[in-house]
Amino acid sequence: MKHWHLSLALICLCSTLAGATPYFRLIDIKHPQTDNSLVYAMKNGAFVGGVTDIALITHANADGSIIPASLQRLGLAPEPWVPLQVGIGGELSGNAFMHIGASANVSAFVAGSIIKMCGGLSNPTAKAIGKFMTDGLTLPGGSTLGFSAGIGIDGGFVHEGHFQSFNAMFPGRGLGQILENASAYTIGLAWQL
Image 1 (cartoon, rainbow, N blue to C red):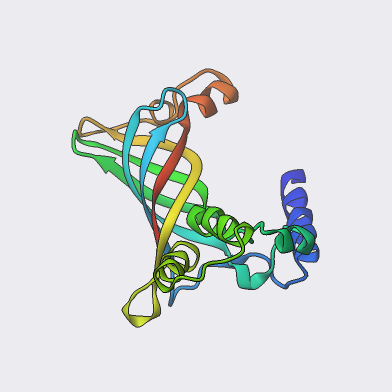
Image 2 (cartoon, rainbow, N blue to C red):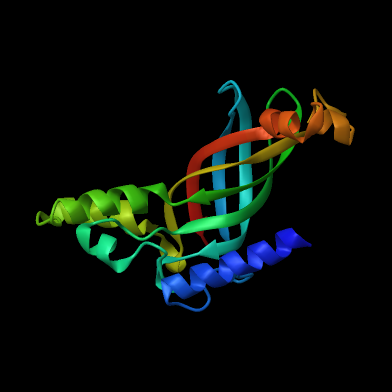
């Protein structure tokens, strides 16, 4: 129960610091945010597979930022991110896994910070590239496409075509070893429909 109280306190603190209500938003069924990524194990960098995630909780720049305004004026861009996403993925050898994690629109944060620190862009082509890197590519129907990176855990529920037990999905002795074996990072594309 303490964990829920801590999470609620953190959300309230972030909302207060950001000066926006709400700081986090639940999934918008009409315009879900999805992510297609490649997953790599943190333990050894091995390729795990491809995954498609759907964001259950999101944060957009329009909802404020925990980065203080003084740092934003110096050029540090706000942080669009997804604190909770879930999905299913796999690879061609008959393995399938579930994925739970978090991700951020890295192009918006990194490119936005670099562009602001350099004093902006003046060339029309550079402006277009900067807009793509920070706002994403606007697709027909109002959806957007951007780059994402994230972390999470994954558990293989199918291995070489056979369903796995919970212990086989998350191998290891004790929580620390299980998390070490299941931790992964993702790199991919995110879009809002």
